[in-house]
Image (cartoon, rainbow, N blue to C red; front, top):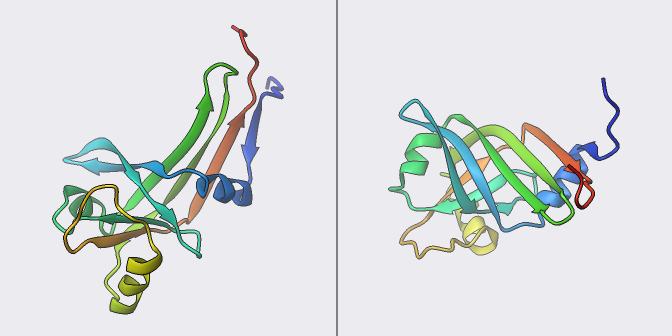
Amino acid sequence: MLQNDAFRALDRQECLRLLAKVPVGRVVYTRQALPTVLPINFALDTDASVLLRTSPDSSLVRAIDGVVVAFEVDEFEAATRSGWSVVVTGPATMVTDPTEHERLSQAGPVSWMPLRDPVFVRIESEMVTGRELRGTPGTR
């Protein structure tokens, strides 16, 4: 195996720190038996789960409630060919507890879209992986 100092696997704590830095990620799920990727803003909860705020009528909620999904965030710099990527994998569930819904209404993610009667979806962080690429400018 080739040793590459430009590539580094990230541990769970580093991944969670980076996850908390960015406002938008991508939900990866299956819709009509096909892979689907949807950019969406989010928040990281105190238990390290990913929280989404969306419409109760959205196709996203219908597709992911009760199934395992992936959630990816990244940040890259093309000029230096460097950056990082983090993937959270776990079951997604709609928050139904009224007390938890109220807490998230106050402290959870704020949707970038106007919503009437929003719902929250929690993606548990059962598996968290990440990698960092430390490139060099102009390398081919």
